[in-house]
Image 1 (cartoon, helix red, strand yellow):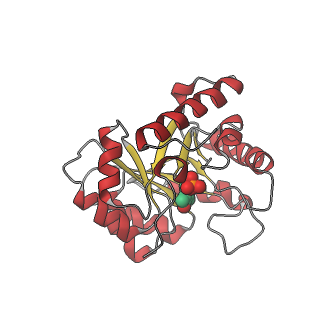
Image 2 (image 1 turned 60 degrees about the vertical axis):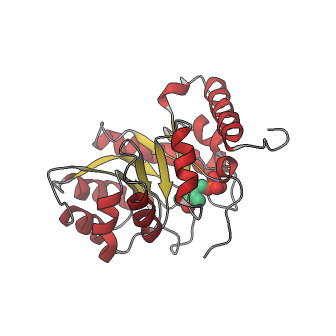
Image 3 (image 1 turned 90 degrees about the vertical axis):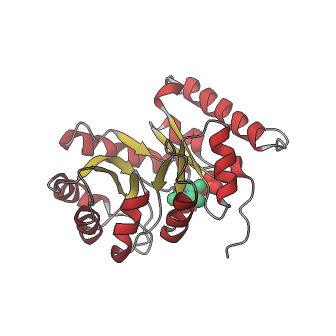
Length: 231
Ligand SMILES: *Cc1c(COP(=O)(O)O)cnc(C)c1O
């Protein structure tokens, strides 16, 4: 991109053009890629502006912020909230009430809590987060656990396993990390063909993610502008 465009609408359309270009470069159809706008630390008013620009998929990484903003914007009934952060099991109910998709399921206790928090007949879409780093402190399962964890989630009646999610490590070429992720996605689909989503790609690496097969991009600052200081 050249100079940072001035308005939210301009930034949004510039990113969408870049997504479409990256998709075509990768021989993919841009329409098979979902762009989620990550709105963390920004006020609900910004989410409302995004909605007016046609955005329907938004992402948050903290439960309290997800709950507060989704309550404030409850009138926007066609807005879908994606939870992309670390969830505490005792907050699973609050996450489930606000989010349509949880990208960051990485342990049995959390999967159980989300399942038990079902409040009506609805099914919650979930993704397995995989850790692409060597640091066990980062979110995500280690890849060796993928099949057993997937089987576990598939047995939970109120969750629908849709695919896999990851964040690229800071100290590795994103393309390399995402090619591992693609391998994990293929393993998962061998077990659960319907679990075909790959949630990967942020402001700095979405072109590499698209090239590696990402179906869901989580893009924040390139669209929203810099995040306000954490409160
Ligand atoms: C904040 C965040 C993003 C978006 O990051 P940007 O670099 O602002 O695009 C994506 N995924 C997760 C898990 C995040 O926490």
